Length: 226
Image (cartoon, rainbow, N blue to C red; front, side, top):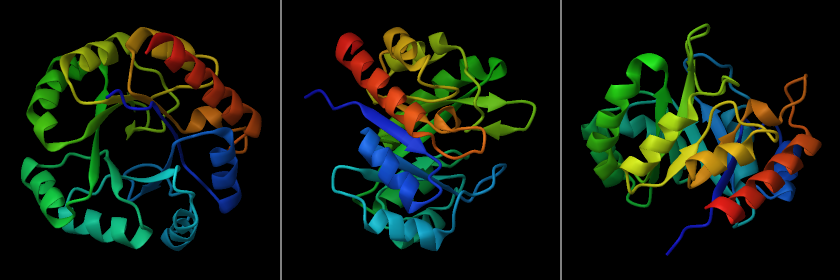
């Protein structure tokens, strides 16, 4: 059965932003914690309150660089979510421990794309696909060292090749916005898209206009091309 496309908006700052995102039609809300570079958007306590009040059709996702199963599960249970997007390096042993400790967990593993790792990333996909539920392709920023929420686009042809190399769902991220999301979906045929900075105004808050436009353009593109 073909899965419904994922449209994730990450970096929620408040309950008001979460409501705006849900109203726009997003399927998943991403909450980044324990980051290497970026500042966290809100406290764990505030995120817990937001997640507790999400409607059933909107799923919360912990986005984190944690790499120890016990710490990841502890934070997920505190927040009240069962989907985790892992951005750091994590061993297969820890992925196995995650599944054993939290059987209902859904694991998304990021694949950070930059020109120097194109060949090795396909090895990573082959090795990790038995242990994860989906991949997320994202962009490395050499200027800051950030791997995600960079606002930078990577070579979508690489993401397209990754999508064609695995039976696991692949969610496309990295520099997406309302202007380019349809073209990105048309080229790569992903199972979902993920945006953070591309729907924010100059002050870093989510823009209702950019959110609405992004979700509408993504949905139309998924209906047309996937």
